[in-house]
Image 1 (cartoon, rainbow, N blue to C red):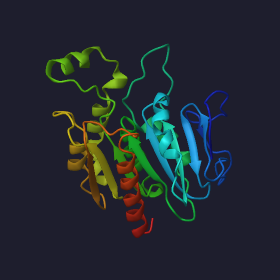
Image 2: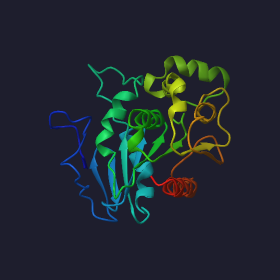
Image 3: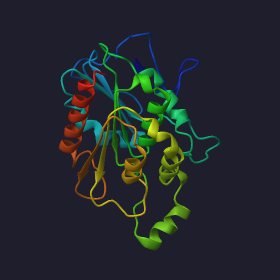
Length: 255
């Protein structure tokens, strides 16, 4: 697999993520980390279990770079911004159908030595990761969901209501996406870990909403960190620990 810019993409390529040839591993060296497209970074063992991190946008890729500098042995990490279609005629990008970017992730869901990839969703990448599991349940081994509402503006009281009117849709539609998928989430059967801030704002559907809906998963683990939001630089050890425990759980299940 190769991730590259959508510019000059071949026919059928989905938002810049395409297989270079069936079964081909990424070209990044084992232990190396490199950006292979806008916001897309590959690091680790090209033959290892693939861990796919879907974050909100290319501008956030630097926040995750530090984690990709130390990929555990036997794993390959791929960090990719949420692959939404480009805006049309300069319009704001709308969040409304996670199925579109989830389908774009399909070429990345590669089996390695009979080991299924794991998906990490962060912020507005959470709904995409969940939709990918619903659409391709046989291709994913486990889910790590970080800050389901990280893209939501956090403001108290009246300021939040005013912000909801003036902020662009990209900043506030993550909740609508999760709620729309709510009735389907009991179909998720694999292990799921939620990582969330201990002091998240009240009234915002996020991790608590997912806890209530993910009733069919094999096991659900909730990890809380200090503060309102999970930050890659500040909470690196918590994220690494949650992922290591999830990988162990998936391996115990034989996936």
